[in-house]
Image 1 (cartoon, helix red, strand yellow):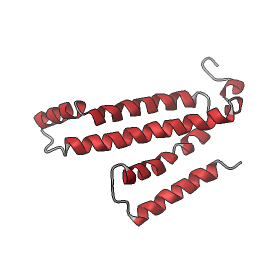
Image 2 (cartoon, one colour; image 1 turned 180 degrees about the horizontal axis):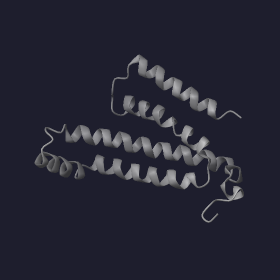
Image 3 (cartoon, one colour; image 1 turned 180 degrees about the vertical axis):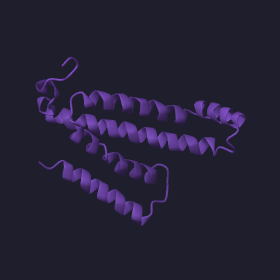
Image 4 (tube, one colour; image 1 turned 135 degrees about the vertical axis):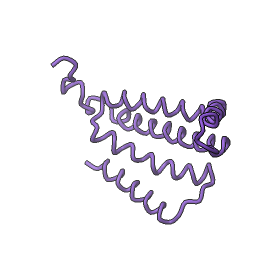
Length: 139
């Protein structure tokens, strides 16, 4: 079948272990940087006052001119491209659950960089996600 991958070129075992672990981790760091930058940029922009066309255009122009929003969008584009590339060599059953680490890193970034209040329930959820990601690394 044309366009299908042969099993020898698709297996993640053909890649060095460090590369297999490094790429999802770097993807997560880029994603978290993008999310935190967007959050910071949107705090700078403020809330959308109304859904009228003129207000939407002004809001969009303000967002496009905000450096933190630009950085966030750029990081999320890089994150998407990295995901597409990673899907060419890693199995979805490994890659997608490994990206759940994003929730842990984003929560830590929100607490320490954006100074957000994180409730105990959210900390518990974050810990559970982290434990779930750790379980996925076991053989």
